[in-house]
Length: 320
Image (tube, rainbow, N blue to C red; front, side, top):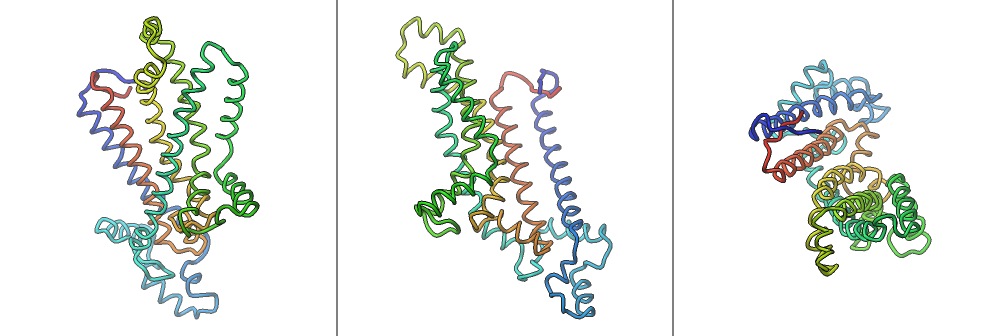
C-alpha cells in the first residue's frame, strides 16, 4: 500500500468510511446467503422428524420462511435496522439476548490472549533482535526462527487439543472444559496466544534490528548511552508502531480463531454458540453471531486505519 499527498485527509476518512459501509452490506448479504445455503429444513429440525406436515407448514409461514429469499432478506434487513435480530427457532429467546450473554466471554478471552501475546512477544523479539544483530549468535538466530516459525504454522485447534491432553487430562492442573473459575481461563488463553506471540516476536525482532541500524542508534552508542536507556527509551517506541498495528489486526484473527478453541474447551462464548446454531439449523442465531463476528473484524480494521492515519500527520494520505 502506497500513499501520496494528493487529496485531503478528509477524503481519506471518507473513503475509509465508505469502504466500511460497503463491507457491512457485503457481510450482511454473505451471512444471509451462507445460512440459507445450508442443506436441511430448520423448521423440521426444531419440531422433530415426527411433526405433522401441517404443523411444519404453519410454522414456516409464521416465521416467514415460505416467502421468496429476496423478501426474507428485505424483512431481515428492516428488522435489523430497528435493532431486532430475530428470535431463536429452538429456544424462542431474542437473538440479541443470546449474543449479549456470550459476547463478553469471547471478547475477554481474545483481549487477554492479545495482551499476553504482546507482553511476551515484544520483549522476546527485542532480545532476539539485539542478540542476533549483525549475524551474531547464529545458533540463537536459527533456534528463534525455527521455533517461532513452527509456532505460527500450528493452528489454535491443535494447540487446544495438546494443552487439554497434557495439562488437563495428563497432569490435572487445569479443568479440561467450561468456565468454572480463574484456572479455567488459562488453557483457552494460551491456545489462542501461542501463535500470535510467535508472529509478533518475529516482527518485533525485524523492527528492532532495523532500528539498531539507524544513524541515531549508532550515534547514541558512540556517546556510550547506557543500554537500558538506549533500548527502552529510543529503540522500543520506534518498534512499537508496526508491532501494535499488526497486533490490532491479530486481535481480529484471535476473535475469529476463538470459534474452534471455544468448541474444544466448551467455552460459553459466541464461538461455541455459532457451531451449535449451525448444526441445529437455528438460522437467526447463526446469522446474528456471524454478523457480530464480521462487524468486530471490520471495526478493528477501521480503527487500525485510523491509527495509521493519525500516526502520519505530515501527509494527506491517499491510497494509490
